[in-house]
Image 1: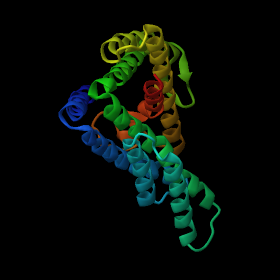
Image 2: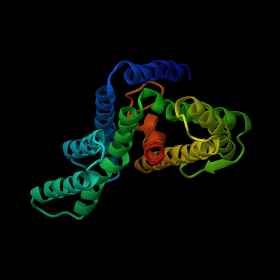
Image 3: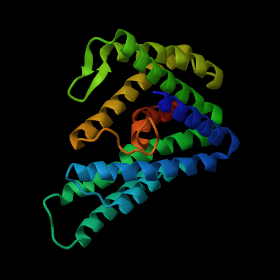
Length: 261
């Protein structure tokens, strides 16, 4: 537990420093690095599930999808089509067709969807709204995650998804939801001017639900692959996927909300 807290005390100030001390391209570079590390872990999990993924192709595709958000109108159709073509070309280049060829192509493209695009949306929020616009997302996810943990420890009785993550409880999920809403309302009222508190409350609830869903999704992959963590990169936290799993589902919705407001 102590190691987990110490790691968090290092990671959060680093993220804030990137957001506030570097120009927007610094956030993009940071996001691209996280994409590369996350996809590398993802490829290992995919291989453990019997679907080998060409690491370099998957990393390049996911980074391209992430970088596409540096422009006002992300050319995602072109980028994703190119990823599919590249993955299919890599499979064809192998010569002999295999039964898992289609699964490998789909898994390679999924890396861009699951990891590349969400981290690209965070860089896009930083570029379009400034560093302050990212803070409500960070604050809400951190508060929700902490509330889930402590509410589960104190009040947890019923498991939320026993076959996927036996330690997560219904009471913890409720705690995460209850605290996420005021966290978004409070932070959004300071850093998202002009957004009504009702919309902020709905956004906070959506981020809490999506964050928990993303967490369970990654847990399901790890359980299927029979591993505890995606890697041992971050002491006390596991890997990049373990740390950002909730962000992958929540960040695109946050980005879409700000773009439509």
